[in-house]
Length: 301
Figure 1 (cartoon, rainbow, N blue to C red):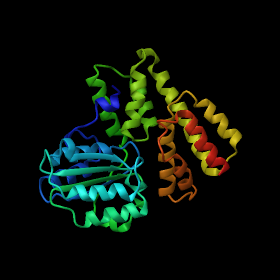
Figure 2 (tube, helix red, strand yellow):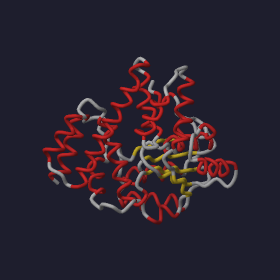
Figure 3 (cartoon, helix red, strand yellow):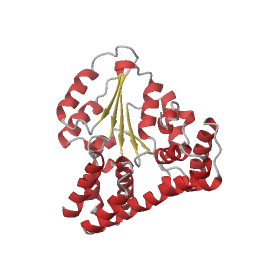
Figure 4 (cartoon, one colour):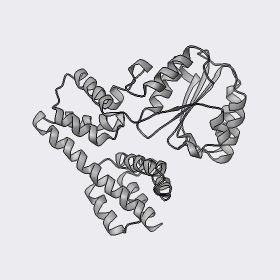
């Protein structure tokens, strides 16, 4: 089992960082619990994890809890089924909970249909919406939600997380390796634990080299991001992709998305949205060829 899944928090008190969000949620779950939560923030910062914890705190178990990735459905028919089911009493719990990941991918019609149930949510129903791009949600949907913005971890928080995992694994890590992982993870817990996973699989004397290799790959990913945004030629993009051929295409995709998100939020380049559009779907089925085709589509677009 990967470290990211092994040490995924199952309760709010185990969350590292984002203490303001954690404290607000803890208070709301004790009294005056909202029926619609909206969790926003960069990929890999813990939105889905917190969403699952909220569902657990609410007491939804078994078939009364549904987690849905809107990459798999985007249309109005699914939302209509949810609206129909929502009016039935829960089967095994005191409530029903729907967790919708990347909810901004819902079509306009689907969002409008969802709005109707959000405006008149049954007392036993709760919705948890997660998104990296809340700007694509209807303003009326956002207006019905209690918003929680997740932020990347600060260096001290990331160090605390890594040290906790290292201790649990009964391992020892040199400070220089800690520093390298923290630098490469950009404040995202998932990135940090994925790098740490690779580091702990080798002998202690080789760990810095593995962490440094991750940094080099990160640098190549950053260069890829910059070229895609600037509209660089396919020749240079092809060279970078060859250097990344043995790396996880999903990690590269998430890095590109995170980089473009930062660019968009800083207002530096409107075409970052076009790059994100080509990279929005996971490469689980297509693998590295899917990454290559996405980059080619951006360059030749």
